[in-house]
Image (cartoon, rainbow, N blue to C red; front, side, top):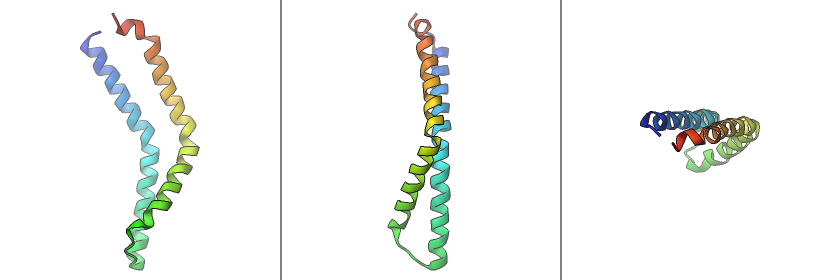
Length: 89
């Protein structure tokens, strides 16, 4: 296996990580920003106020986008397993 193949696999894996984590991170960012604006407006300085809404929004997003994330991971793994004989040469 050449270094070019290893770099291609690593690049695809990193892109998959970014692509699959993006919905969860974006939702967490939006919810956190919304709660921070709410805290600023109301002058509430409670640090633990963001945890429950963020966790709930992450779980809901994971339920909605979980199938899409799993499909992407399965496609990537199938691609790796199909070309396994090429990689070990």
